[in-house]
Length: 266
Image (cartoon, rainbow, N blue to C red):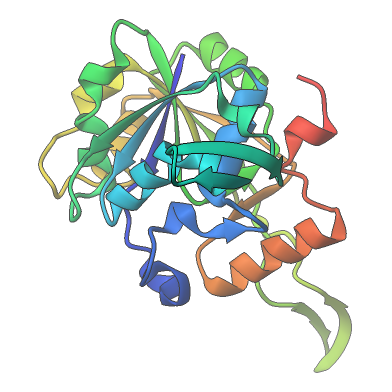
Protein backbone atom coordinates (compact mmCIF):
# COMPACT_ATOMS: atom_id res chain seq x y z
CA UNK A 1 0.00 0.00 0.00
CA UNK A 2 0.99 3.57 -0.61
CA UNK A 3 0.88 6.57 1.69
CA UNK A 4 -0.13 9.93 0.21
CA UNK A 5 1.16 12.96 2.13
CA UNK A 6 -0.14 16.48 1.54
CA UNK A 7 2.94 18.71 1.40
CA UNK A 8 1.77 21.73 -0.60
CA UNK A 9 0.40 24.26 1.89
CA UNK A 10 2.07 27.58 2.65
CA UNK A 11 1.97 27.35 6.44
CA UNK A 12 1.04 31.02 6.81
CA UNK A 13 0.62 30.78 10.59
CA UNK A 14 4.30 30.04 11.14
CA UNK A 15 6.05 32.56 8.91
CA UNK A 16 9.13 32.40 11.13
CA UNK A 17 9.89 29.08 9.43
CA UNK A 18 7.82 28.87 6.26
CA UNK A 19 9.01 32.13 4.72
CA UNK A 20 12.16 30.24 3.80
CA UNK A 21 11.06 26.60 3.53
CA UNK A 22 7.90 24.50 3.08
CA UNK A 23 6.20 23.49 6.31
CA UNK A 24 7.01 19.75 5.96
CA UNK A 25 10.73 20.63 6.08
CA UNK A 26 10.49 22.44 9.44
CA UNK A 27 12.94 20.59 11.65
CA UNK A 28 12.25 18.74 14.84
CA UNK A 29 15.71 18.36 16.27
CA UNK A 30 17.82 17.57 13.17
CA UNK A 31 15.15 16.01 10.96
CA UNK A 32 12.15 17.59 9.20
CA UNK A 33 8.66 16.75 10.43
CA UNK A 34 7.99 15.06 7.06
CA UNK A 35 10.73 12.53 7.82
CA UNK A 36 9.15 11.84 11.23
CA UNK A 37 5.76 11.21 9.57
CA UNK A 38 7.28 8.88 7.00
CA UNK A 39 9.13 7.00 9.74
CA UNK A 40 5.81 6.36 11.51
CA UNK A 41 4.39 4.68 8.41
CA UNK A 42 7.65 2.92 7.61
CA UNK A 43 7.59 1.34 11.07
CA UNK A 44 4.37 -0.42 10.05
CA UNK A 45 5.77 -1.55 6.72
CA UNK A 46 4.34 1.25 4.56
CA UNK A 47 7.34 2.45 2.57
CA UNK A 48 5.85 3.60 -0.74
CA UNK A 49 5.10 7.33 -0.52
CA UNK A 50 3.44 9.87 -2.79
CA UNK A 51 4.20 13.48 -1.86
CA UNK A 52 1.71 16.09 -3.10
CA UNK A 53 3.96 19.11 -3.60
CA UNK A 54 3.09 22.78 -3.92
CA UNK A 55 4.68 25.72 -2.12
CA UNK A 56 8.48 25.44 -2.38
CA UNK A 57 8.09 21.83 -3.47
CA UNK A 58 11.50 21.90 -5.16
CA UNK A 59 13.08 22.15 -1.71
CA UNK A 60 11.44 18.87 -0.68
CA UNK A 61 12.77 17.22 -3.84
CA UNK A 62 16.26 18.58 -3.12
CA UNK A 63 16.14 17.35 0.46
CA UNK A 64 15.52 13.74 -0.49
CA UNK A 65 17.78 13.80 -3.55
CA UNK A 66 20.61 14.90 -1.25
CA UNK A 67 19.43 13.08 1.88
CA UNK A 68 22.59 11.04 2.41
CA UNK A 69 24.90 14.02 2.18
CA UNK A 70 22.65 16.32 4.21
CA UNK A 71 22.58 13.85 7.09
CA UNK A 72 26.24 12.88 7.12
CA UNK A 73 29.63 14.32 7.84
CA UNK A 74 31.81 13.60 4.82
CA UNK A 75 34.99 14.50 3.01
CA UNK A 76 34.88 15.47 -0.66
CA UNK A 77 38.10 15.09 -2.65
CA UNK A 78 37.67 17.72 -5.37
CA UNK A 79 40.67 16.40 -7.31
CA UNK A 80 38.93 13.08 -7.92
CA UNK A 81 35.29 14.08 -7.51
CA UNK A 82 34.84 11.31 -4.96
CA UNK A 83 33.38 11.62 -1.52
CA UNK A 84 34.11 9.68 1.64
CA UNK A 85 31.60 9.32 4.45
CA UNK A 86 33.24 9.72 7.83
CA UNK A 87 30.51 9.81 10.51
CA UNK A 88 26.76 10.28 10.56
CA UNK A 89 24.31 11.78 13.02
CA UNK A 90 21.50 9.61 11.64
CA UNK A 91 21.62 6.34 9.78
CA UNK A 92 21.55 7.17 6.05
CA UNK A 93 20.28 3.64 5.46
CA UNK A 94 17.13 4.38 7.48
CA UNK A 95 15.22 5.16 4.29
CA UNK A 96 17.11 3.04 1.77
CA UNK A 97 14.02 0.89 1.15
CA UNK A 98 11.61 3.81 0.73
CA UNK A 99 10.06 4.58 -2.63
CA UNK A 100 9.04 8.24 -3.00
CA UNK A 101 6.99 9.72 -5.83
CA UNK A 102 7.09 13.52 -6.04
CA UNK A 103 4.03 15.09 -7.70
CA UNK A 104 3.70 18.82 -8.34
CA UNK A 105 0.04 19.49 -7.53
CA UNK A 106 0.14 23.29 -7.87
CA UNK A 107 1.15 26.05 -5.50
CA UNK A 108 -2.36 27.46 -5.01
CA UNK A 109 -4.42 24.25 -5.17
CA UNK A 110 -6.56 23.10 -2.28
CA UNK A 111 -6.26 19.69 -0.60
CA UNK A 112 -9.01 17.91 -2.55
CA UNK A 113 -7.49 18.98 -5.85
CA UNK A 114 -4.07 17.72 -4.77
CA UNK A 115 -5.44 14.29 -3.89
CA UNK A 116 -7.41 14.08 -7.14
CA UNK A 117 -4.23 14.71 -9.13
CA UNK A 118 -2.39 11.64 -7.81
CA UNK A 119 -5.00 9.06 -8.85
CA UNK A 120 -2.79 7.60 -11.59
CA UNK A 121 0.05 7.03 -9.11
CA UNK A 122 -2.12 4.82 -6.88
CA UNK A 123 -2.01 2.21 -9.63
CA UNK A 124 -4.22 -0.82 -9.07
CA UNK A 125 -4.17 -0.60 -5.27
CA UNK A 126 -7.61 -0.88 -3.70
CA UNK A 127 -6.73 1.30 -0.70
CA UNK A 128 -4.15 3.89 0.29
CA UNK A 129 -3.18 5.85 3.37
CA UNK A 130 -3.50 9.63 3.43
CA UNK A 131 -2.20 12.22 5.86
CA UNK A 132 -0.92 15.77 6.20
CA UNK A 133 2.69 16.93 6.27
CA UNK A 134 2.36 18.59 9.67
CA UNK A 135 0.68 16.07 11.99
CA UNK A 136 2.16 13.50 14.37
CA UNK A 137 0.58 10.63 16.28
CA UNK A 138 1.32 7.29 17.88
CA UNK A 139 -1.75 5.75 16.22
CA UNK A 140 -1.22 2.10 15.30
CA UNK A 141 -1.37 2.16 11.51
CA UNK A 142 -2.01 -1.58 11.26
CA UNK A 143 -4.96 -1.38 13.65
CA UNK A 144 -6.29 1.64 11.75
CA UNK A 145 -6.22 -0.33 8.50
CA UNK A 146 -7.89 -3.38 10.07
CA UNK A 147 -10.67 -1.13 11.36
CA UNK A 148 -11.09 0.43 7.92
CA UNK A 149 -11.48 -2.98 6.27
CA UNK A 150 -13.91 -4.15 8.94
CA UNK A 151 -16.19 -1.18 8.29
CA UNK A 152 -16.16 -1.59 4.51
CA UNK A 153 -16.51 2.16 3.88
CA UNK A 154 -14.80 4.36 1.32
CA UNK A 155 -12.80 6.34 3.90
CA UNK A 156 -11.75 6.13 7.53
CA UNK A 157 -10.28 8.93 9.65
CA UNK A 158 -8.93 8.93 13.16
CA UNK A 159 -11.08 10.77 15.69
CA UNK A 160 -9.09 12.44 18.46
CA UNK A 161 -9.78 14.55 21.53
CA UNK A 162 -7.50 17.59 21.39
CA UNK A 163 -6.17 19.38 24.43
CA UNK A 164 -7.32 22.91 25.16
CA UNK A 165 -4.68 25.58 24.58
CA UNK A 166 -5.91 27.27 27.76
CA UNK A 167 -6.50 26.29 31.35
CA UNK A 168 -10.16 25.78 32.30
CA UNK A 169 -11.83 27.23 35.39
CA UNK A 170 -14.61 25.42 37.24
CA UNK A 171 -16.71 28.08 38.95
CA UNK A 172 -19.19 27.91 41.82
CA UNK A 173 -21.02 30.91 43.30
CA UNK A 174 -18.55 33.34 41.79
CA UNK A 175 -15.52 31.49 43.16
CA UNK A 176 -12.98 29.30 41.45
CA UNK A 177 -13.71 25.76 42.59
CA UNK A 178 -10.90 24.14 40.65
CA UNK A 179 -8.49 24.78 37.80
CA UNK A 180 -7.55 22.37 35.03
CA UNK A 181 -4.36 23.03 33.12
CA UNK A 182 -5.09 22.50 29.39
CA UNK A 183 -7.51 19.55 29.72
CA UNK A 184 -8.76 17.37 26.88
CA UNK A 185 -11.82 18.86 25.22
CA UNK A 186 -15.09 16.90 25.33
CA UNK A 187 -15.64 16.71 21.57
CA UNK A 188 -13.65 14.81 18.94
CA UNK A 189 -12.10 16.16 15.76
CA UNK A 190 -10.63 14.81 12.56
CA UNK A 191 -7.04 13.78 13.38
CA UNK A 192 -5.89 13.78 9.76
CA UNK A 193 -4.72 10.17 9.45
CA UNK A 194 -6.91 8.49 6.81
CA UNK A 195 -7.35 5.22 4.97
CA UNK A 196 -9.08 5.65 1.62
CA UNK A 197 -10.55 3.26 -0.91
CA UNK A 198 -9.86 4.27 -4.50
CA UNK A 199 -13.59 5.08 -4.85
CA UNK A 200 -12.80 8.29 -3.02
CA UNK A 201 -11.70 9.82 -6.31
CA UNK A 202 -15.40 9.89 -7.29
CA UNK A 203 -15.84 12.52 -4.56
CA UNK A 204 -12.91 14.68 -5.66
CA UNK A 205 -12.24 17.20 -8.40
CA UNK A 206 -8.97 18.38 -9.89
CA UNK A 207 -10.29 21.95 -9.86
CA UNK A 208 -7.96 24.03 -7.70
CA UNK A 209 -10.82 25.08 -5.38
CA UNK A 210 -11.70 21.54 -4.23
CA UNK A 211 -11.15 21.36 -0.46
CA UNK A 212 -11.04 17.78 0.82
CA UNK A 213 -12.24 18.76 4.30
CA UNK A 214 -15.38 20.44 2.96
CA UNK A 215 -17.71 18.95 0.33
CA UNK A 216 -15.86 15.63 -0.21
CA UNK A 217 -15.85 14.66 3.48
CA UNK A 218 -19.35 16.04 4.00
CA UNK A 219 -20.65 14.02 1.07
CA UNK A 220 -18.90 10.87 2.30
CA UNK A 221 -20.57 11.35 5.69
CA UNK A 222 -23.93 11.98 4.00
CA UNK A 223 -23.56 8.73 2.06
CA UNK A 224 -22.52 6.88 5.24
CA UNK A 225 -19.16 6.12 3.66
CA UNK A 226 -16.95 7.77 6.29
CA UNK A 227 -15.83 5.74 9.31
CA UNK A 228 -14.07 7.04 12.42
CA UNK A 229 -11.36 5.18 14.32
CA UNK A 230 -11.17 6.49 17.90
CA UNK A 231 -7.61 7.21 18.98
CA UNK A 232 -7.02 8.12 22.61
CA UNK A 233 -3.26 8.27 22.43
CA UNK A 234 -0.88 10.99 21.33
CA UNK A 235 -1.84 13.39 18.54
CA UNK A 236 -0.39 16.78 17.66
CA UNK A 237 -0.87 19.18 14.74
CA UNK A 238 2.09 21.53 14.18
CA UNK A 239 0.39 24.76 13.20
CA UNK A 240 2.47 27.57 14.74
CA UNK A 241 6.06 28.23 15.69
CA UNK A 242 5.09 27.69 19.33
CA UNK A 243 4.07 24.17 18.36
CA UNK A 244 7.52 23.61 16.84
CA UNK A 245 9.07 24.65 20.14
CA UNK A 246 6.72 22.34 22.06
CA UNK A 247 7.62 19.33 19.92
CA UNK A 248 11.33 20.05 20.21
CA UNK A 249 11.01 20.29 23.99
CA UNK A 250 9.33 16.89 23.97
CA UNK A 251 12.23 15.46 21.99
CA UNK A 252 14.75 17.05 24.37
CA UNK A 253 12.94 15.60 27.39
CA UNK A 254 12.84 12.12 25.89
CA UNK A 255 9.03 12.16 25.94
CA UNK A 256 8.11 12.05 22.25
CA UNK A 257 5.34 9.42 21.85
CA UNK A 258 5.26 9.61 18.05
CA UNK A 259 8.69 7.95 17.85
CA UNK A 260 6.99 4.56 17.53
CA UNK A 261 9.97 3.08 15.69
CA UNK A 262 11.94 3.49 18.92
CA UNK A 263 9.35 2.89 21.60
CA UNK A 264 6.90 0.19 20.55
CA UNK A 265 6.48 -3.00 18.57
CA UNK A 266 4.39 -3.32 15.42
